[in-house]
Every structure is written in C-alpha cells, then in structure tokens.
Length: 504
Ligand SMILES: [Zn+2]
Image 1 (cartoon, rainbow, N blue to C red):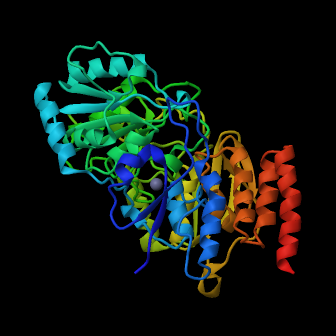
Image 2: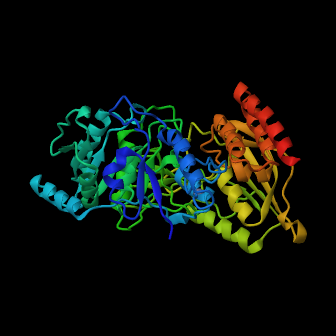
Image 3: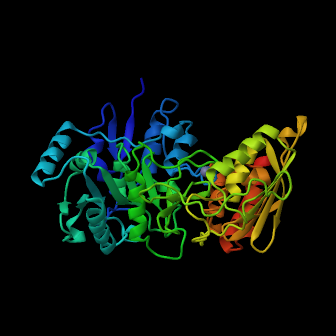
C-alpha cells in the first residue's frame, strides 16, 4: 500500500482537502485572477523541495507526476495532462476526465438556491465569464449571448463570477458572485449547459455529464493542449483560426444549438478519418451551419437548422476520379458518406498506389463558404495518418500554387513496413516543413494548428527528457529550416552536440 503525498495548489484548497487517503503539502502561493502577488510557476518553485523529500527515501519514493514535456504531444494532439500521464506510464485512454469531490451539502445548497431564484434544474445555463485578461471574451459578448439564450432558446442564465466583473442587467439573469468552489460545483450538477473560458471552472464542469462550451481567446497556446476533458464539450476556437480577435456571439450560440438540439447523449459528430469527436468550432461559414473540426484538422459543415436536413446542392458524381485510384478532394465536394465509400474501397481492393489531390492547407483562412452544409474539408494530416494505419507509405508530395498532391504506395512482404527515408517538403500551417515521413508522423503531424515557433519546443522536450538521441538532430534541423531564428539556430547546435554525445 503506497503512502501518497500530494503537492497541491492553494487556489483549490477547498476541494483538495476533501480527497481521502492522501497527505497534502502546499505549493508556494500562486497568482490568481484577482491577486497581484504570488508566483506564475508554483510547480517550478516546489520542485527542489519535492526532490529533497524524495532523496530522503531513496529507492522507496517515486515521483508520479511533474513537468515532463513529452515532445510528441502536439503530433498526438494531447492535453498536457494526458501527455504527462503518458510520460509516467499511466494510460488514460479516451476516458480521461477530471475528478471533482462534490459534497452532498453543495447539492442541497444549490437546490435551495434554484428555488430562491425561481430556476428549474436542467433548464438554466451556468455562465462563467471571468478569467485572465488575455483569455476573456468580453462582458458585452457574454451579455449579448445571455439575451440570445433567453430570447431564442428560453434559457435563463446564472452568472458565476467575481464582483470585479461588474453587474449584468439582462432580464432574467441571476448573479451568483463570490460563491465557494463547492457551491459552484453544486450548481454545475443541476445546470443544463455550461459556457465558460479557458479557466478553472471549465475544468470543473468537465467532470459532470453536462454539455460544456469553452470559448478560447488566447492565440499562443494550442487550445487542444488545455481543453477541459469531456466528451460532451465543444471548444470555440474561431479566433485561433482567424485574424479576428474574438469569436462571434453567433458562433457560440451555434455551438449551443449543436449541443442542445439533438436528443442524443453525445450529439457531436465523429471524425470519419480518426473517429474522434469533432469538438472544435471554427465558426459560421454558411447560414444555418457551423464548421466543426477534429483535432486532426478535418473539418465539416455541420447543419444546425431546425429541420436537421442537409440541402445538398452539389451532387457527387459517382465516378469522376482522374484515374482508378485518384481521389480529388480539391475540386469536388465530399460528404462523410462519400468519404466512407472511398475508405472501404481502399480497404477492400488494397490498390498498390493511391493519390489524393487536396487544397493547399492554410491555417489562418479556413475557406468561408467554400463548402455547403453537410460537406467535408479534408486536410493532408488526416489522410496521411489514416493511410499509414492502413499500411500505406507516402511516396511523393507535389505542390503547386494552391494544390497538394499526396501519392501513397503499399509495400508488399518485407517492404510492408518500409519507411520513406527521403526528406519531403510538406505543406504545414502557412509554411513548408522539411521532414521524413516517420519523423513527420511522430513529431509534426499537427499542421492545422502548427506554428513554426512550436517546433523548437519539440527539440527542447527531447533534450529535457534525454531521449531520442538519433532523432533530435533531424528535428532540430527541421525546426531551423522552418524558421531561421537565433533560437532555432541555438537548438540546432545544441541538438547536434547532444546527439553526438548520446551516440557514443
Ligand atoms: Zn480526425
């Protein structure tokens, strides 16, 4: 029986002390959204203390969780939480969810609160509009949303926040300011929907089987890294993928419609390439539709009109492939059904060669209006990963002005597991990446989200974890070619010597 010592953050004290069978130590005081004192990195400051404590019990104490920058976490589109768990050999699989110790008295309190304000369980929206300044969506946007929720969907809102945000005077709104974390969790248990930002309460909401909408504002962190882990959540990433600074109110309302209009428990469509739920909301391109995206980059014009019927105004010609196994995703519109028929055809016939023609991906502009509702926008990463799983290897990538052509071949016998060792030029974000196939799929297959600056982070992670000596140099070279800066040059040199040292 292990003795668990947990280092925790004081901001969560109220909930952490409810956990049984653990001994708690506290991190140095962390900054919260209101205070000016405290540190930004309580974990870093506690590290030395933790090390000392472990040293005392040599060979019988283990560090189960720390900052492990798994360098392939982007390519897997993992949250930092999942990546850290993986680094210590803990498999969370698809079922990773946060845990919240809800007390019976919290629920009793929340029931009383609802009664007092004439609210009905399951019929109100819990809105959490406050976070760090760079993550705020703006009070006006929330205020407009609260009105739209009431006028169009007959839903009243309960705002949980600090008084610092100021009052909301929308008709029917309830201001629940200065609640304890327990009280907030009680309200979450009774709410019909939660709308919040990239902040603590959103991760609390993810514990419940509650439709959750998280609006991401900050453009530096990839939203998938910090997303609250819930299968019933939509993440509004409109501003991450556009030049606009804030997502539109209509986009968030569209996300509400997706979650609430269906009778299904999990109404979020599944990615036809990697089968994950398409939880990222890019915005409205067509009236009555909302562009949903999978973390692999494939996106879909999801119909959100009340009829639920898709007006297919572009018919799909049965056979207009260039050749037998050429698939043109650039000039024709594809529905999930069409794609599935192509997939089963490849699986069944296992042709030796398969070619795909695609639009050149462009991270910042996602082609508003190009695809009518019901249609897919397919990207290189999603095809490539799917083809790799089916035993195909990339042979060639041809680039023209606005097109990308991917050519795959299926090796036979011993060649089946061959890797294409050639360094390819791969369209990636708004740039091109020089990388081999294996390297690409292992480290860089996040082209839809990609920023060249993040590439150096991969090399840094490899060095920090003292692993992958044969790959660090190649990755450092890729990072340098994608963005020639002092930082990437420094890591190119470091990576070179570090790889040399390790290979001896
Ligand atoms: Zn996918």
